[in-house]
View 1 (cartoon, rainbow over the protein chains, first blue to last red):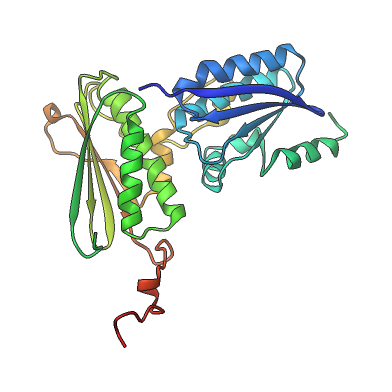
View 2: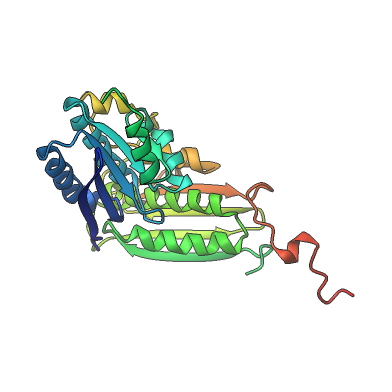
Length: 120
Length: 166
């Protein structure tokens, strides 16, 4: 009973946005990693993972994101996350993922934070 | 379904990742009928998803011929959830550690191992039931109590609905 996820990569200002449309579980690993590698190959420095608020995320999906964090640190990339429900924001804080990726309610607010970031 | 009655819902799902979503939807329906608030229902959905995923992946080796049994007991003051698996991987873990995400990011620890920790943080009681007979597999129990802060106040409970009383 595998679940499909649609992962799209697009550029927006100073950021590369990776849209995650669907459940973020173990079945999403290949799609997310491919999207991240594609963004990195294109020189992405600021990467926004944009979630759809009502989708299902489990600990296996969080582990995939931690894997991305690991790679991003090696490449000096900045990770941001948007669109998470209040519940999953709480879960991400609970496991410590927010030490490595800032959360924003919307893409617009994430982009605004980058525009105010003179260190990138 | 009256919160005063004790009702039991039992599910048998194939031991295949993805089927935990059925338990997730079922428990959301039961919790909603018990008038748990939306935030608590989200907690319960995540907890049961993680517990069923563990039962599928570790308790029965993702062998879809096996079944994971989920028993939801709606009581007056709590929701009791029991998850049974065949115990294919032997005894369940005894300790639940706080995830060391720094260790994962630095490559010192494998990715994962967060499910039980998340469950413990989200429900009031959680743990493997020790019944002394390993042949019966594993039983993982979670309890969520109905707290006043969790309960969604509905018109018929708030005292503002006088229908039929005048």
